[in-house]
Image 1 (tube, one colour):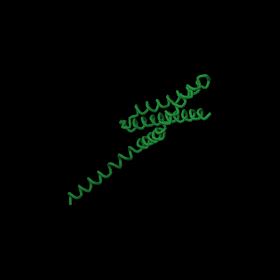
Image 2 (cartoon, rainbow, N blue to C red):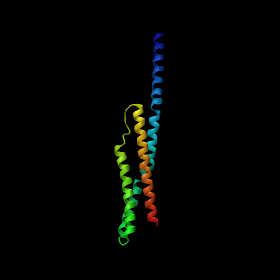
Image 3 (cartoon, one colour):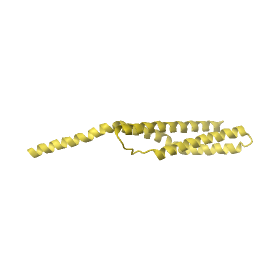
Length: 136
């Protein structure tokens, strides 16, 4: 009977421990999910960015006699390149396994969320502007 009581107490303690850890990790895990959701939303656009950039550069070359249009296409291609580079830079620096106190992890993930949202905005805006210029 004594052995059974000790075993039940040990099982209850073990069952409660993981739940406590999950509760403590929930805010950072939610932030990590948000960070990855923004990344996963814009990452597939990388190919479209490169294609649009190539088209803009081709238009810049073919508009050599019209220096204003050539400069416009070149500038839009440069904006796309910068947006692409910011994504690559963010991915190189992002550490999905960042460790620290709960506050440090939360601060890191909040910073990363802010960063990837900026990358997303840059990518979407430069892509939109490039497409619009090609349609004109």
